[in-house]
Image (cartoon, rainbow, N blue to C red; front, side, top):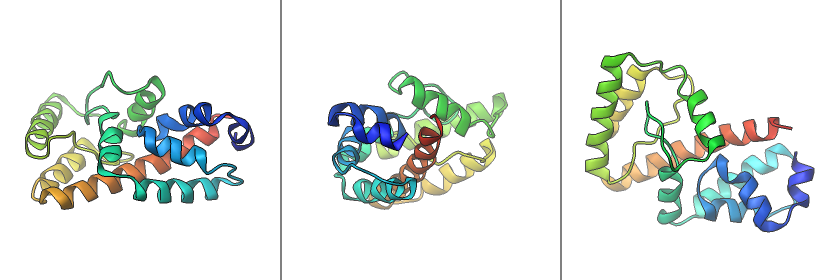
Length: 165
């Protein structure tokens, strides 16, 4: 996968990796740093590029996700498929779905963006507890926490992306 990706034109390489994160600036930055020789080098590069991005690029990545427990039209088909898998352990019942929807609304009202959590392996109850805990954060602390959650999600998706070969 890496050899083929390294050989792509810059725009095509950025488009190919974009579903892993959702930030066009991140995708362009990672693609611009090619060639990448190993998976570990890609993971490290991803983190470096992510941490250097401006707030607006982070917000773009956040907006590419479906809400926890929901689908989202902005996400790419690949991103939606990965989100479904990442949230599969949640398996919320109707009560949990309603609580997550209410929590999502409260979070969005407070922070003006969707709640981002690395959902892999977490139940709906766990994610709801995390959401309630993070509602106590000040806006800057919460932005940094959301960025860290996005970084973790991106790492998982990069691994899935490399396995598509």
